[in-house]
Image 1 (cartoon, rainbow, N blue to C red):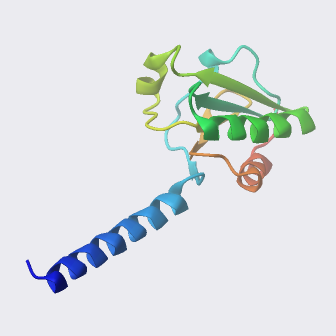
Image 2 (tube, one colour; image 1 turned 90 degrees about the vertical axis):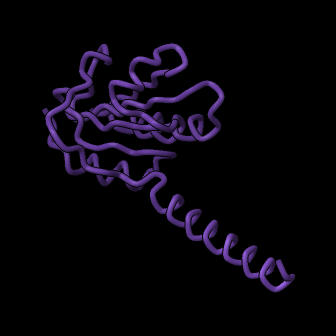
Image 3 (cartoon, rainbow, N blue to C red; image 1 turned 90 degrees about the horizontal axis):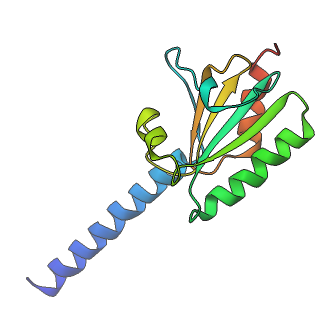
Length: 138
């Protein structure tokens, strides 16, 4: 290969990696509406009056700690919202049940325990608050 071909190949790889990184970044922390009538009520001892923020994390995950601070802060500010953190290293069967491929992953449950939304990656405060405003209190 000539030096020009090598340079063009490297430039192409950098461009592809950049595009993929931007796509990943845009998807990370995005709220997706849940489809179907799945429930996670059996994982939570006490559901929040309006919602429960069910966070799946692992002990070695740095974004999980930041997400826990965000979700815990929201639950502290709002009496009708609960925050539950489940460590998947202790309960790996849950990852398969809910198709969790990354940590943190947060499920937004309504007052009955039905899954209303899913957030893959670090949860953004404004996105969580917007989702909570759409849920009706019990």
